Length: 162
Image (tube, rainbow, N blue to C red; front, side, top):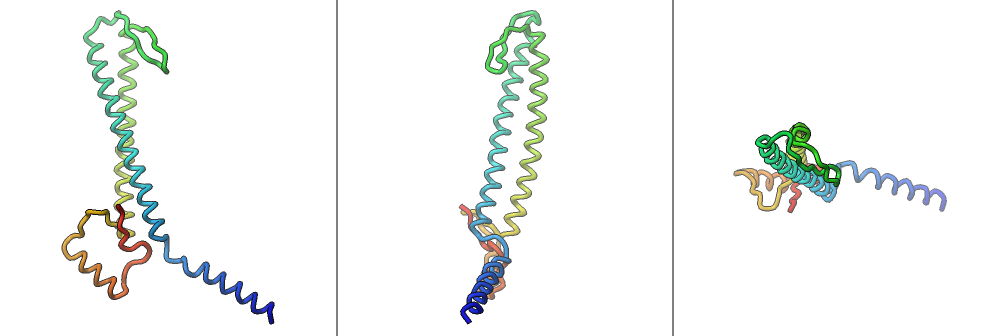
């Protein structure tokens, strides 16, 4: 008898551990994933702003060098080493770098837009509201009615993120 009761206890533990977690991620997991996505978008925006500043610096230097004699000496920092060159050697390299940085910024901006759409879809899927964000007219009443009737959505419904 003892062997059969221990095997039935093990079977009930197995059923409980797999049966209760079928509804989706917990509220903490939803919030953590949302925060991670927001942080990724913020870091992309910061990198984009940094690269925009570099583009502006490149533009200033290019505009200045265009007004100077092409045979004049100029110094350029390459990999932490200051190198002496002429304006005619440096100007094409600067213009090329500026174009490459511009392409990277465009790529980052499209990635940020994609990440923004993913964030919006994620917010809608899990009904995430940010602190200080108000529901539109009628939304709060409809959500309260659904919850009071037991018809709330699955997963992290009504998750509030600060």
